[in-house]
Image: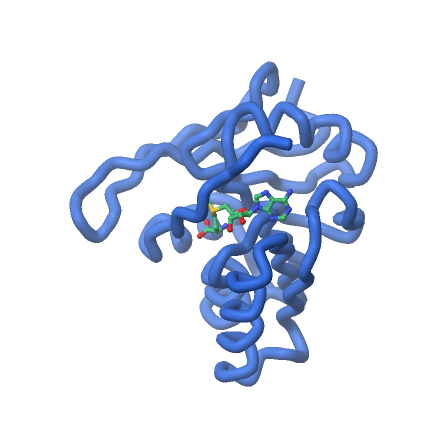
Amino acid sequence: MIYVPYVPTPYSVVRAMLKLANASTEDVVYDLGCGDGRIVLVAAKEFSVKKAVGIEKDPERYKLALTRVREEGLEDRVEIKLGDFFEESISDATIVTLFLLTSVNEMLKPKFERELKPGTRIVSHEFRIPGWKPEKVVDVRDENGLSHVIYLYVIGRHL
Ligand SMILES: C[S@@+](CC[C@H](N)C(=O)[O-])C[C@H]1O[C@@H](n2cnc3c(N)ncnc32)[C@H](O)[C@@H]1O
């Protein structure tokens, strides 16, 4: 199994990703490898999504994310699961967020094609989904002026 290190997405980039995906009250957002839970928390707090699910296999990060959800009182809309995202169903997602590696995105392609409905948006920070056609590629600056690329894919229009 490929090791993906923990590096958080800067908050300005989190917001840009959710904006690019046009996240709103009708959406169910999944962050695969949710780290401290920041993407699912911002999705619920600032974009008022119906439901947000973070999946994290590192027990320490999982505990941290869960604590943050409880502190914010968002347990009714934000769920944090301890586990391997390859093993968890994501079939009710309307938006999937990623900050992994190109090689891991490649491995996720069959799962996405099997489980995700047409129209589901996938937003990936920094790493493309190899062989898929992005709907949009956006360059954003973070709080420190550093440049980040985000890729938007839409299931059904990705080939
Ligand atoms: C680069 S960090 C991104 C964290 C968060 N999504 C963000 O953007 O701030 C990647 C995270 O994915 C987790 N991860 C890697 N492979 C995983 C897997 N197969 N199942 C669940 N979590 C995984 C790592 O433990 C790490 O916390």
